[in-house]
Length: 62
Image (cartoon, rainbow, N blue to C red):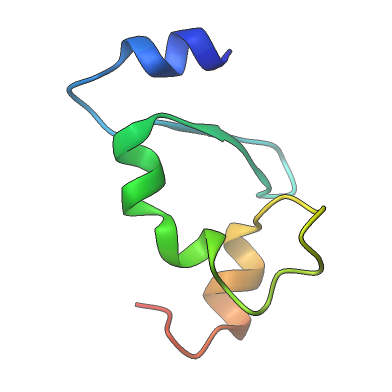
């Protein structure tokens, strides 16, 4: 999966599951979703970033 994401160099791309956990990104995707990765709403450093948790709980959401 990561090789496919990395091959998409001219577009942002990410993969998420049904619970909106971000499972993988390419370089542009990680830049676009950097607020989600650095959000204080993450359950822990071990858990994957979650788009829904960021959207509803983070004060920096867009």
